[in-house]
Structure formats: C-alpha cells, structure tokens
Image (tube, rainbow, N blue to C red; front, side, top):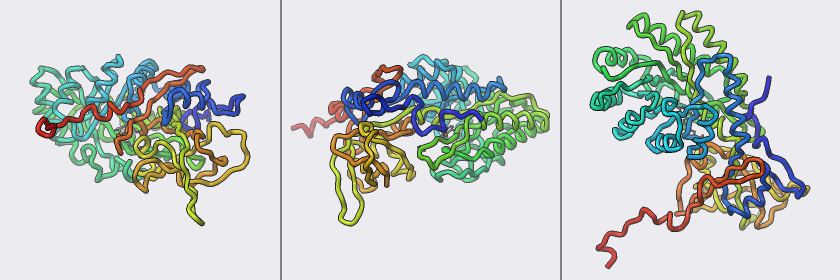
Length: 443
Ligand code: LLP
C-alpha cells in the first residue's frame, strides 16, 4: 500500500547537498543556522502539504469526511493559513487557538472547540465567532453553554464527547479513551445528557458523538472499535429518544516515526479500515451514513518539523557517558523529559564523515533530567557543529516554556530554497515584558 508522510523519519525534501550539508526544502541547514541562529524550529511546507493530501486522498472514497487539524500540535498564524488553504478544518481547545485560526482567516464553520473545562469567556467567544461545533464534555458544561447561548439568543451546535472505554498502547499520559479518563461522558451518562438536551436545554442542538482514544497510536484496530461503539450508541439513541445523530468524530491519534523502531500505519491503511468499518456499521445498525470527522494533529505536522541546535560544551564522565550539550532542550522540547520520548538526529555539517562516537545529547536547562537523546551514534563532534533533531513539528513549540527565563526559539518555513520567519525569536525584552514591579518596591 502507498506510504504516507507520517511514516517518514525526515521531511520528504531532506537531502545532502554538494557541500556535504543537510538541506531541507531546498535550504542548507547550516545557512539557516547562520542566518537565524539556533535553536531554530524549521518547518518544511512541502511535507506539510503532502500529508494533508495523503489524508484527503485516503478518505476520498467517503466524501462525507472532514479532516480537522488538531491545532494543539502546533498552532501559529502561518501554519493555520497553510492548513486552511488545504481545505482542512481545525480542532481547537482554547481561546488562544481559536483566536489564532480566526485571525489567520480560517473558515470558522470548519472549527470545532474541545476541552474538559472550557471557560465562560471561551464559550462566549466560540458563540460570537460562530465556531462550527462545540464538543461538550460534561453536565456542568451542558448547562453553562445553554445559559450563555440563551443569553445571546443563539443555538449552540454541539457534539457529546464520550469515553468509549477503549485502551490503547501508548504512554499513559497520552491515553484518553479509557474508562477512568478525565474526558467526556461515560457511556452510562449519555442518556441523561440527551434527556436534558431534549427537554430542558433548548439552546443546544445535538449533531453527534465525539471520542478520542489517545495519541501516537500504531494499532489500527482502535478506530473500528471506536466506530462500533459510536454507531451502536447512535442506533440506540434513535430507538430510545427518536433523535437522529449524523456526525461521528473519532478524534486523532495516528502515530509518526520518531526513530527506526516506530512503524506507524499510513493514512491510506487507516482510511481503508475506517471506511470499511463505517460501511459495515451503517448496514448493520441501519443508520444514515454519518458525516465523519477526524482530528489528526501529530501525524499532520510532526514530520515536517526539525529543530536545529548548536553543539557547545561536552563532558566525558570517567568510564561513563559522554555528554554533549546543546543550546536548547526541555524548554523548547519537553517531550523526552515528560514522556521518555525518543528522537533521531544527525549532524547537519558532517554528513560525509565516517568516524563516529556514542554520545548523550544534553539540554542546557538546569535539571539533570534535561536529556534530549539518551544514546546516539554521531560523527566525532566539535563545538559549533549543528545538530538536526527530526520530527519536532508536533508538541514541541506548542509545549515550549520560558523555563530558566530562556527566550523561545524562532521558527522558519522553508520551501523551494526560500526561508521565511513565521515565529520571531523572543528577545530579553520579551522575557520581562509582563513583569510589574509594585511602586512601593521601586523606592
Ligand atoms: N483530538 C483530541 C480530542 C485530542 O485530545 C487530541 C490530542 C487530538 C485530537 C490530537 O491527537 P494527535 O493526532 O496529535 O495524536 N503532548 C502529547 C500529546 C497530547 C495529545 C493530546 N490530545 C505528546 O507530546 O505526545
């Protein structure tokens, strides 16, 4: 079966150029590091647009499919523009994400708002901006949203987020569909929610069900299991309440290849499995073919991103490890310290050297746990070498912090030999921009 871009370790435009340097999107990584300094996030537009197409093609046989990019993976104004231009919608989880896609000119009817504790202000914002769908997570939110919609004389278009009770084999911090998850209505609570919507909450219109099982998933069986449960519920709710639900949102979760050990399925493989399963449940439960929503985040943006760092000091522990330190780490990529995530890297300026050594890539932040890569074979390293860490497009910048009051890196978009800044590097002034010294302390 055809490969899709989430199955690649590196952006699809990666090659070694005539100087022996790695180039991505037609841009020499050493020139990028010189021009923009490091750490530097680099996003390859071709890879990003290719995966969007992989998704569209994979689901083209089911025309009622809507791909909603989970913007929590990486949400910036330029990325939102690209995703919108590819015709995808957005799954958002905060006022900040909604505002970003709105200001980027996205079609707000193709935006969905998720979250287990949405604020009053956020719910007002989504109603004011006519966001397409709100996935309601719990009883408190049902009542709050109805009240806000009523005060605005509007009808809120909603889905119910359910917990289907499916476990997937991924890191426990990124599992969400199991029974004791903090997200969504338990299956035993759905009927009460539907009754409330039918009888009391007149400003809510229920369109369908929503679930999300987990992230960095390689098991293809998860999605059909989820569809089975949702279709069964839709048929049951119709029989019991006479309510016609015609939307199924199965969340995101498709994995990517961080290292050679990872073998994620392709969009084409899951597309076929999902569509076959849908056709099967439509027949078996005798339901109307539903609109199908998917919310991929990581698998859309991860492979297109790499991070460049400059190699600095090193330390050989006598009879132990060799630590090599870089100018970034857990504040720009918290995933290794948070989830023991593994990454693959290469030295951008030493593609043609043979001699190698095994090193530990250490971050610059003041924690022993700030280790980006535990053990990797790299060419003999010198201070000033540029290391390129692959697959950092998702959940790196979006989870970045200013720990140790270090400025967040810049981000550039590369395409056809051109590089353009899409996030400016923070300055020292940015670092203190929100600080206030009370008058009495100034004396
Ligand atoms: N939809 C919902 C409701 C979600 O909660 C998530 C992710 C997604 C879609 C997108 O999932 P994806 O396709 O990206 O796997 N920070 C963690 C990942 C947390 C994912 C949270 N929810 C990490 O760095 O691995």
